[in-house]
Length: 275
Image (tube, rainbow, N blue to C red; front, top):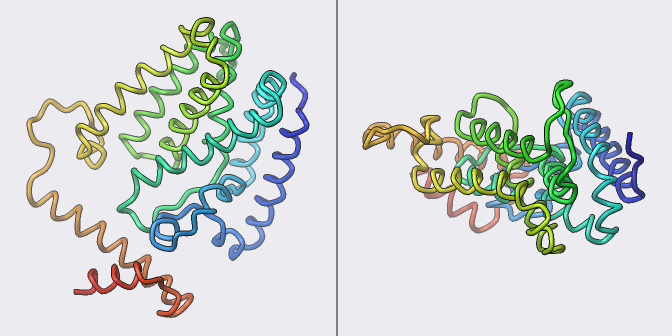
């Protein structure tokens, strides 16, 4: 089993400390969680990073810590301290930015966890060590195959939205980690082209469908052959639901901090939604 690198051990210690504080103190948790309304309207951009040190419970924390344990040291030893930090935090922020984009109209959407950053380390490891094998439920497979399956599972999860897992942050974080390490070491394009292609090509295909047929996210199907995904009534109901969600988030903030707790942009949004 791999040993922790110095930075990996430090990140894990901070994550355990912050997560534990969040477990026992709901106010602490709420102050640093990823929430669309606080980031988009409150401009609390620090949440893009701080949410990566919080978790919903011990199982969530321990599962992430186990994955981090298996992949962090190999990346840290191979690329060095500063590059390791860049991969980790670029993956964390990149994953959360993609999640923010996808859920931009869902004001109350929230998430926590280091999975986006850890996914970046996983994909970076697969590219740095093209001959590696990755175990999944006791079954070992080539790293490129694991990466491919990861993309497929994430794409299905993003589209179906049938669980509480942040598949969008996982996938985007993993891709940011892959791209970052390739930019750092361009020779990987030659030595790890199979792994890079196995991950990037299906991911790019998914993003193409995602942006070409955004309505498919609502209906849970990006591959429908129907010429139209939504009726006018469908669109109206979806828009109404988003506006109600937005208004609820603003009212919650007023309830906690008063009307003066809203910034100018939030007040304008409140006035528009209240009409």
